[in-house]
Length: 292
Ligand code: GLU
Image 1 (cartoon, rainbow, N blue to C red):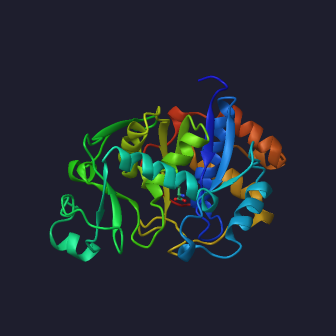
Image 2: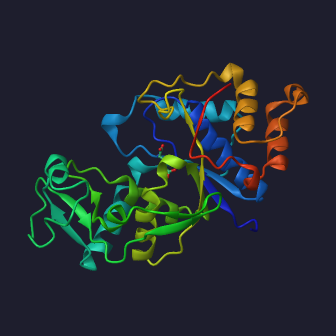
Protein backbone atom coordinates (compact mmCIF):
# COMPACT_ATOMS: atom_id res chain seq x y z
CA UNK A 1 0.00 0.00 0.00
CA UNK A 2 1.20 3.52 -0.67
CA UNK A 3 0.49 6.83 1.01
CA UNK A 4 -2.80 7.01 -0.89
CA UNK A 5 -4.14 4.97 2.04
CA UNK A 6 -7.20 6.57 3.67
CA UNK A 7 -8.67 4.97 6.78
CA UNK A 8 -11.36 6.06 9.20
CA UNK A 9 -12.98 5.62 12.57
CA UNK A 10 -16.76 6.04 12.48
CA UNK A 11 -18.29 6.11 15.97
CA UNK A 12 -22.02 6.43 16.65
CA UNK A 13 -22.53 9.03 19.38
CA UNK A 14 -24.84 6.91 21.51
CA UNK A 15 -22.58 7.30 24.55
CA UNK A 16 -18.96 7.86 25.55
CA UNK A 17 -16.10 5.89 24.02
CA UNK A 18 -15.48 2.63 25.86
CA UNK A 19 -12.62 0.15 25.62
CA UNK A 20 -14.32 -1.73 22.74
CA UNK A 21 -14.65 1.37 20.59
CA UNK A 22 -11.10 2.39 21.52
CA UNK A 23 -9.86 -0.84 19.91
CA UNK A 24 -11.49 0.16 16.61
CA UNK A 25 -10.10 3.69 16.93
CA UNK A 26 -6.54 2.58 17.79
CA UNK A 27 -6.53 -0.29 15.25
CA UNK A 28 -7.73 1.90 12.39
CA UNK A 29 -5.32 4.68 13.42
CA UNK A 30 -2.25 2.43 13.61
CA UNK A 31 -3.08 0.68 10.35
CA UNK A 32 -3.43 4.07 8.60
CA UNK A 33 -0.24 5.47 10.09
CA UNK A 34 1.75 2.28 9.46
CA UNK A 35 0.75 2.70 5.80
CA UNK A 36 1.80 6.39 5.83
CA UNK A 37 -1.86 7.12 5.30
CA UNK A 38 -4.54 9.56 6.33
CA UNK A 39 -6.86 8.80 9.24
CA UNK A 40 -10.33 10.34 9.33
CA UNK A 41 -13.10 10.51 11.89
CA UNK A 42 -16.75 10.39 10.85
CA UNK A 43 -19.50 10.93 13.36
CA UNK A 44 -22.35 8.51 12.59
CA UNK A 45 -25.12 10.58 14.14
CA UNK A 46 -27.82 9.16 11.90
CA UNK A 47 -30.21 7.99 14.54
CA UNK A 48 -31.26 10.86 16.87
CA UNK A 49 -33.38 8.71 19.23
CA UNK A 50 -30.31 6.59 20.05
CA UNK A 51 -28.01 9.54 20.55
CA UNK A 52 -26.95 11.01 23.84
CA UNK A 53 -26.60 14.80 24.08
CA UNK A 54 -22.95 15.81 24.14
CA UNK A 55 -21.67 12.34 23.19
CA UNK A 56 -20.18 13.43 19.84
CA UNK A 57 -18.14 16.21 21.45
CA UNK A 58 -17.19 13.90 24.29
CA UNK A 59 -15.92 11.24 21.85
CA UNK A 60 -13.76 13.79 20.04
CA UNK A 61 -12.29 15.12 23.31
CA UNK A 62 -11.51 11.55 24.38
CA UNK A 63 -9.81 10.76 21.06
CA UNK A 64 -7.66 13.85 21.51
CA UNK A 65 -6.76 12.85 25.07
CA UNK A 66 -5.57 9.53 23.62
CA UNK A 67 -3.44 11.39 21.06
CA UNK A 68 -5.60 10.12 18.19
CA UNK A 69 -5.65 13.24 16.03
CA UNK A 70 -7.61 13.06 12.80
CA UNK A 71 -6.17 14.43 9.57
CA UNK A 72 -9.15 16.24 8.03
CA UNK A 73 -12.30 17.89 9.27
CA UNK A 74 -14.72 15.52 11.03
CA UNK A 75 -17.84 14.85 8.96
CA UNK A 76 -21.25 14.41 10.57
CA UNK A 77 -23.79 12.10 8.97
CA UNK A 78 -26.60 14.31 10.30
CA UNK A 79 -25.44 16.91 7.76
CA UNK A 80 -25.26 14.57 4.80
CA UNK A 81 -28.98 14.01 4.07
CA UNK A 82 -28.86 15.48 0.59
CA UNK A 83 -26.04 13.10 -0.40
CA UNK A 84 -28.10 10.14 0.88
CA UNK A 85 -31.20 11.35 -0.99
CA UNK A 86 -29.15 11.68 -4.20
CA UNK A 87 -27.86 8.15 -3.71
CA UNK A 88 -31.40 6.85 -3.20
CA UNK A 89 -32.57 8.69 -6.32
CA UNK A 90 -29.75 7.09 -8.29
CA UNK A 91 -30.75 3.59 -7.15
CA UNK A 92 -34.45 4.27 -7.77
CA UNK A 93 -33.75 5.49 -11.30
CA UNK A 94 -32.23 2.11 -11.98
CA UNK A 95 -35.47 0.47 -10.81
CA UNK A 96 -33.64 -1.14 -7.94
CA UNK A 97 -35.88 0.07 -5.12
CA UNK A 98 -39.38 -0.54 -3.84
CA UNK A 99 -41.46 0.33 -0.80
CA UNK A 100 -42.31 -2.25 1.81
CA UNK A 101 -44.69 -1.97 4.75
CA UNK A 102 -43.99 -5.30 6.41
CA UNK A 103 -43.40 -5.15 10.13
CA UNK A 104 -40.47 -6.95 11.72
CA UNK A 105 -42.95 -9.28 13.34
CA UNK A 106 -44.56 -10.20 10.00
CA UNK A 107 -41.16 -10.91 8.49
CA UNK A 108 -40.13 -13.09 11.41
CA UNK A 109 -43.30 -15.13 11.35
CA UNK A 110 -42.71 -15.82 7.65
CA UNK A 111 -39.09 -16.89 8.14
CA UNK A 112 -35.94 -15.33 9.53
CA UNK A 113 -35.25 -13.25 6.43
CA UNK A 114 -37.30 -10.90 4.30
CA UNK A 115 -38.34 -12.66 1.11
CA UNK A 116 -39.48 -9.86 -1.15
CA UNK A 117 -43.14 -9.96 -0.09
CA UNK A 118 -43.73 -6.34 -1.20
CA UNK A 119 -41.59 -6.39 -4.32
CA UNK A 120 -44.43 -6.33 -6.82
CA UNK A 121 -47.02 -4.50 -4.76
CA UNK A 122 -46.08 -1.01 -5.98
CA UNK A 123 -46.71 0.45 -2.54
CA UNK A 124 -46.57 4.17 -1.89
CA UNK A 125 -44.02 5.82 0.37
CA UNK A 126 -46.31 6.49 3.35
CA UNK A 127 -45.55 4.38 6.35
CA UNK A 128 -43.22 2.22 4.29
CA UNK A 129 -39.49 1.52 4.16
CA UNK A 130 -37.53 1.65 0.92
CA UNK A 131 -35.76 -1.59 0.04
CA UNK A 132 -32.97 -2.21 -2.43
CA UNK A 133 -33.44 -5.16 -4.76
CA UNK A 134 -30.52 -7.56 -4.50
CA UNK A 135 -29.91 -8.83 -8.02
CA UNK A 136 -26.43 -10.29 -7.46
CA UNK A 137 -25.97 -11.20 -3.78
CA UNK A 138 -22.48 -10.81 -2.35
CA UNK A 139 -21.90 -14.20 -0.75
CA UNK A 140 -18.33 -13.72 0.39
CA UNK A 141 -15.51 -11.22 0.67
CA UNK A 142 -11.84 -11.28 1.52
CA UNK A 143 -10.97 -9.83 4.90
CA UNK A 144 -7.37 -8.63 5.41
CA UNK A 145 -7.16 -10.58 8.65
CA UNK A 146 -9.59 -13.48 8.30
CA UNK A 147 -9.21 -14.28 4.60
CA UNK A 148 -12.37 -15.44 2.83
CA UNK A 149 -15.51 -14.78 4.85
CA UNK A 150 -18.70 -16.41 3.67
CA UNK A 151 -21.98 -14.65 4.26
CA UNK A 152 -25.18 -16.54 5.02
CA UNK A 153 -26.89 -16.99 1.64
CA UNK A 154 -30.34 -15.92 2.78
CA UNK A 155 -28.89 -12.83 4.41
CA UNK A 156 -26.91 -11.97 1.29
CA UNK A 157 -29.98 -12.39 -0.93
CA UNK A 158 -32.27 -10.20 1.18
CA UNK A 159 -33.58 -6.97 -0.34
CA UNK A 160 -32.38 -4.73 2.46
CA UNK A 161 -33.68 -1.40 3.74
CA UNK A 162 -31.90 1.76 2.63
CA UNK A 163 -34.43 4.32 3.90
CA UNK A 164 -36.37 3.45 7.01
CA UNK A 165 -40.08 3.78 7.67
CA UNK A 166 -39.37 6.43 10.30
CA UNK A 167 -37.56 8.54 7.68
CA UNK A 168 -34.05 7.77 8.92
CA UNK A 169 -31.39 6.68 6.46
CA UNK A 170 -30.16 3.13 6.91
CA UNK A 171 -26.68 2.54 8.26
CA UNK A 172 -25.49 0.54 5.21
CA UNK A 173 -26.49 3.25 2.77
CA UNK A 174 -24.93 6.11 4.74
CA UNK A 175 -21.70 4.21 5.41
CA UNK A 176 -21.15 3.43 1.74
CA UNK A 177 -22.08 6.91 0.49
CA UNK A 178 -19.65 8.39 3.02
CA UNK A 179 -16.85 5.88 2.48
CA UNK A 180 -17.03 6.84 -1.21
CA UNK A 181 -17.21 10.58 -0.41
CA UNK A 182 -14.22 10.40 1.92
CA UNK A 183 -12.18 8.24 -0.46
CA UNK A 184 -11.71 5.47 2.11
CA UNK A 185 -9.32 2.80 0.83
CA UNK A 186 -9.58 0.45 3.81
CA UNK A 187 -12.18 -0.02 6.53
CA UNK A 188 -10.84 -1.23 9.89
CA UNK A 189 -13.62 -1.87 12.42
CA UNK A 190 -15.05 -4.42 14.82
CA UNK A 191 -16.03 -7.95 13.82
CA UNK A 192 -19.70 -7.21 14.64
CA UNK A 193 -19.84 -5.52 11.24
CA UNK A 194 -18.69 -8.54 9.23
CA UNK A 195 -22.22 -9.47 8.10
CA UNK A 196 -23.23 -6.03 6.79
CA UNK A 197 -20.05 -5.94 4.69
CA UNK A 198 -21.77 -8.00 1.97
CA UNK A 199 -24.53 -5.41 1.68
CA UNK A 200 -22.02 -2.62 1.63
CA UNK A 201 -20.05 -4.31 -1.16
CA UNK A 202 -23.28 -4.69 -3.11
CA UNK A 203 -23.92 -0.96 -2.73
CA UNK A 204 -20.42 -0.09 -3.97
CA UNK A 205 -21.23 -2.17 -7.07
CA UNK A 206 -24.52 -0.34 -7.63
CA UNK A 207 -22.72 3.00 -7.41
CA UNK A 208 -20.04 1.66 -9.79
CA UNK A 209 -17.33 2.60 -7.30
CA UNK A 210 -14.31 0.57 -6.21
CA UNK A 211 -14.82 -0.93 -2.77
CA UNK A 212 -12.27 -0.44 0.02
CA UNK A 213 -10.54 -3.42 1.58
CA UNK A 214 -11.82 -4.60 4.96
CA UNK A 215 -10.14 -5.64 8.17
CA UNK A 216 -12.35 -6.71 11.06
CA UNK A 217 -10.76 -6.57 14.49
CA UNK A 218 -11.79 -8.86 17.34
CA UNK A 219 -14.55 -7.50 19.52
CA UNK A 220 -13.97 -6.92 23.17
CA UNK A 221 -16.44 -9.01 25.11
CA UNK A 222 -17.56 -9.40 28.69
CA UNK A 223 -16.96 -12.59 30.63
CA UNK A 224 -20.43 -13.84 29.56
CA UNK A 225 -19.44 -13.47 25.89
CA UNK A 226 -21.61 -10.41 25.21
CA UNK A 227 -20.04 -7.53 23.27
CA UNK A 228 -18.77 -4.64 25.36
CA UNK A 229 -21.17 -1.93 24.28
CA UNK A 230 -23.06 1.15 25.29
CA UNK A 231 -26.21 -0.98 25.51
CA UNK A 232 -24.73 -3.14 28.25
CA UNK A 233 -23.29 -0.13 30.04
CA UNK A 234 -19.61 -0.49 29.26
CA UNK A 235 -17.86 2.16 31.31
CA UNK A 236 -16.70 5.28 29.44
CA UNK A 237 -12.93 5.70 29.11
CA UNK A 238 -11.16 7.73 31.76
CA UNK A 239 -8.91 10.21 29.95
CA UNK A 240 -6.73 10.64 33.04
CA UNK A 241 -5.74 6.98 32.54
CA UNK A 242 -5.08 7.40 28.81
CA UNK A 243 -1.53 6.00 28.86
CA UNK A 244 -2.38 2.81 30.76
CA UNK A 245 -5.52 2.29 28.69
CA UNK A 246 -3.63 2.81 25.43
CA UNK A 247 -1.07 0.22 26.51
CA UNK A 248 -3.93 -2.17 27.34
CA UNK A 249 -5.35 -1.56 23.85
CA UNK A 250 -1.93 -2.32 22.34
CA UNK A 251 -1.79 -5.56 24.34
CA UNK A 252 -5.28 -6.50 23.11
CA UNK A 253 -4.09 -5.87 19.54
CA UNK A 254 -1.11 -8.19 20.16
CA UNK A 255 1.59 -5.55 20.00
CA UNK A 256 4.76 -6.63 21.87
CA UNK A 257 4.07 -4.50 24.94
CA UNK A 258 6.89 -4.19 27.53
CA UNK A 259 7.37 -2.30 30.83
CA UNK A 260 9.51 0.41 29.24
CA UNK A 261 6.40 1.70 27.47
CA UNK A 262 5.19 3.17 30.74
CA UNK A 263 7.94 5.82 30.50
CA UNK A 264 6.79 7.05 27.10
CA UNK A 265 4.48 10.00 26.43
CA UNK A 266 1.24 9.45 24.51
CA UNK A 267 2.68 10.68 21.16
CA UNK A 268 5.74 8.46 21.72
CA UNK A 269 3.46 5.52 22.52
CA UNK A 270 1.52 6.01 19.29
CA UNK A 271 4.77 6.26 17.33
CA UNK A 272 5.97 3.02 18.97
CA UNK A 273 2.59 1.41 18.21
CA UNK A 274 2.80 2.45 14.56
CA UNK A 275 6.30 1.00 14.24
CA UNK A 276 5.31 -2.29 15.90
CA UNK A 277 1.87 -2.67 14.31
CA UNK A 278 1.47 -5.94 12.45
CA UNK A 279 -1.75 -7.20 10.85
CA UNK A 280 -0.41 -10.72 10.69
CA UNK A 281 0.07 -10.84 14.46
CA UNK A 282 -3.47 -9.68 15.21
CA UNK A 283 -5.66 -12.21 17.02
CA UNK A 284 -8.01 -13.98 14.63
CA UNK A 285 -10.86 -14.60 17.06
CA UNK A 286 -14.04 -12.67 16.31
CA UNK A 287 -14.33 -11.75 19.97
CA UNK A 288 -12.03 -11.82 23.00
CA UNK A 289 -12.94 -11.59 26.66
CA UNK A 290 -11.42 -8.51 28.21
CA UNK A 291 -8.77 -9.13 30.82
CA UNK A 292 -6.98 -5.92 31.74
N1 GLU B 1 -20.95 3.60 13.46
C1 GLU B 1 -20.71 2.20 13.56
C2 GLU B 1 -20.57 1.81 15.01
O1 GLU B 1 -20.27 2.66 15.85
C3 GLU B 1 -19.45 1.79 12.85
C4 GLU B 1 -19.59 1.85 11.38
C5 GLU B 1 -18.43 1.33 10.58
O2 GLU B 1 -17.28 1.35 11.07
O3 GLU B 1 -18.67 0.97 9.43
O4 GLU B 1 -20.75 0.66 15.32
